[in-house]
Image (cartoon, rainbow, N blue to C red; front, side):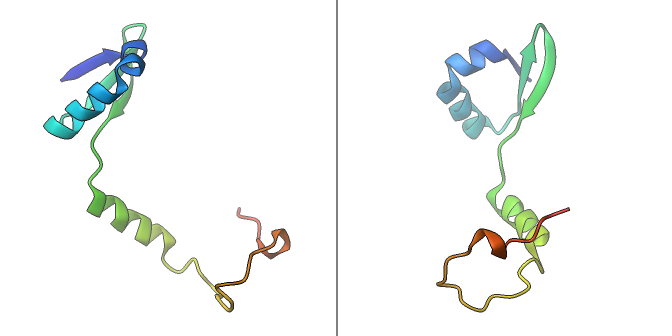
Length: 78
């Protein structure tokens, strides 16, 4: 388990990301000695499948794909 302080993580971000990609092991970020976040590698296929499921059925009407969308064309999301 790799545990690193946020300030150290910021200072060596590229190094830690390379380690994450190489080992696949999560990195636990700490602040004042307490774990506040867990960084894990992203499985591109799984991430894309999750996005597709969330977006499925979200396009209700697509008449003119080359036309710009104006502010009045957006519906508010609840």
